[in-house]
Image (tube, rainbow, N blue to C red; front, side):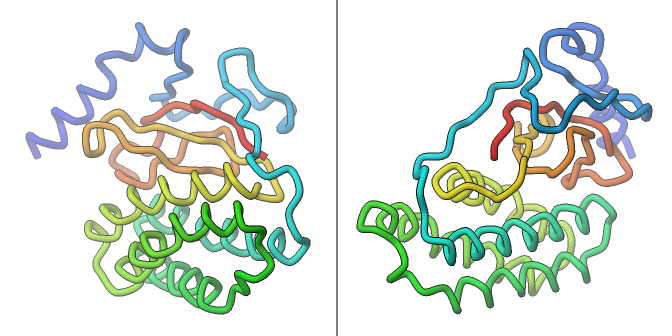
Length: 197
């Protein structure tokens, strides 16, 4: 109980200092939504490394992103069963991916990410929520690298929680902060750092 109170106080202690400069969102009120495709003044727009990929690679990435977001949303909603199912789908999608669709440069980037991403997805599919969250933090870094390289087929937001593991990130389909690391305990703790397409 004391740890949770310290975590809440720590996340909220910087509220007034950071709200204006980093977009920290700690209250339960939804943030005003702007046009979902326009970058905010304080949110960096991240460009995709490979401007042109095979249409089947784009389809693969859309599927990976959809399953990743399902894991993220399940963790935010404290649902380890749904998180496990969605991460299991990610493993299946990776197993069925035809890497011959990638150029040599694309394959090198993919190969650097694939094993770790698959390992984290497998762990999430077989464990309880706290262990799922540990692997989700690492999975999120891998998914960030994948989306940065190959695109997502949609607008995504790179969010950051300063509290979990001394700072952890995740990708989200919405500007609204829904923290997958703390769920109901600190649902809106975090900030939007970047926008990706």
